[in-house]
Length: 310
Image (cartoon, rainbow, N blue to C red; front, side):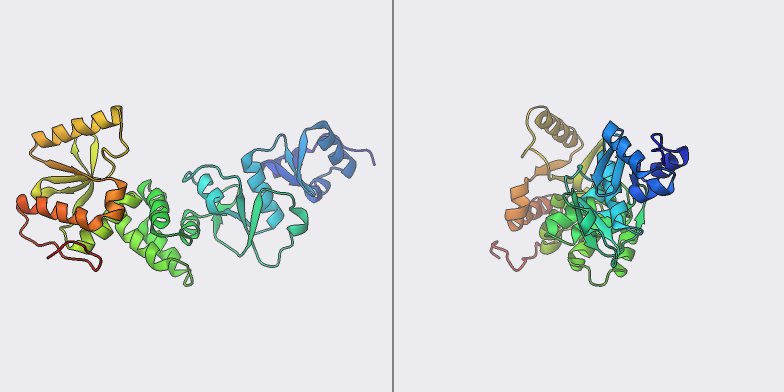
């Protein structure tokens, strides 16, 4: 049979559904011959990604991801940080995690490769198929500590890629999910406005642990500028990303905002990462003291690790 050197239009349309990735079997079923496929590869118009898997043109990252899904078989999907990248929640990773249903056979086709295959069926969407936002977030939150959990939750919820209710529903469907308690606590914290790991730590380790009043998160007090935490009744703002780490123009903006708040009778306190993570009890004592000066009639409570004397 004469080698067909031009792929049929129908095959190109089919490959387009796979981000311009095609397998040898699909090419043969679509009207190509083996010699024709070899000719496409030899000419550089197709690139071999794995045994029997090709990209049409120089492979992009998305084509590598799609090829991993094709190798995994029907029901496979991109997961992990690769799925987070496809959802716009993180940088493009070098390793592409692929979830493939149990019972599929792919290892013989996938070496060497940029893929890391996992066994299991996950809910997926999009092209190339990737875990849903909820499944992606839970997978990434299932490893690491509170900072990792709060970081991924913040990315997903602050940009409205999902909702607390949808995440909670996904957790119900995963009864053996690692870090379940941490994730639920993080959802509760981010739900009330804490947008970063530092803000979640302040809420948990400073406010709640020491019985301080609950501040309002991410409120615009000065035009187009949001505060991390404001105790409105006591005219006190707490900024958690202030002078520590802000230099030059950023430092000037912080000083200008503090001055604008002061004109409105609002005092500002600023704490860095080390303050909130290493000295939360001391931070709580300072905030409580200022709140009391400004009218709070409550008392700071001591947490189990509090070094602050009664």
